[in-house]
Image (tube, rainbow, N blue to C red; front, side, top):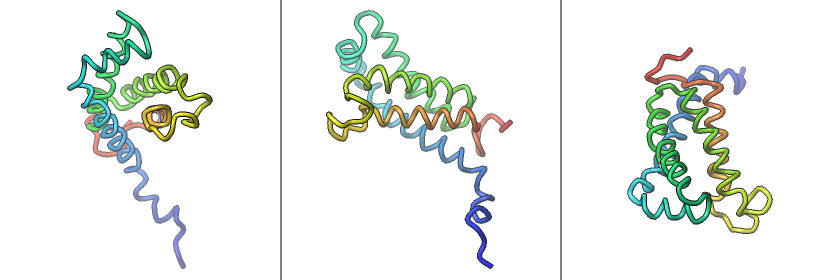
Length: 145
């Protein structure tokens, strides 16, 4: 008798949040590290397109913290539920406030296939929301509850 797909994958299900946590953290880090090396131009872009002086410094600092420090927390599994919830809230805000107004309705219908417009931050936000609900999975600094 051929086993069902559920029976085949069930032993690996505790590792699914781990994989999601690692991949989400790595994507966040890959998105955030270049901003560390271009802080003045990043700050100027935020000031020009999102919020003006002096509030743009809060957005820049928050973005650098979320995309670098919290990404490392996700990768290593430190306070995953809290880290993921903060990151989800931040990226929902980024998706709708910073990128949502530039794309018409919801998706990149008018501006081409540019991943940093809406889909990328929205996907990161949903991934982090799932992690905040599910938890860290295996191989985390904090034990799974």
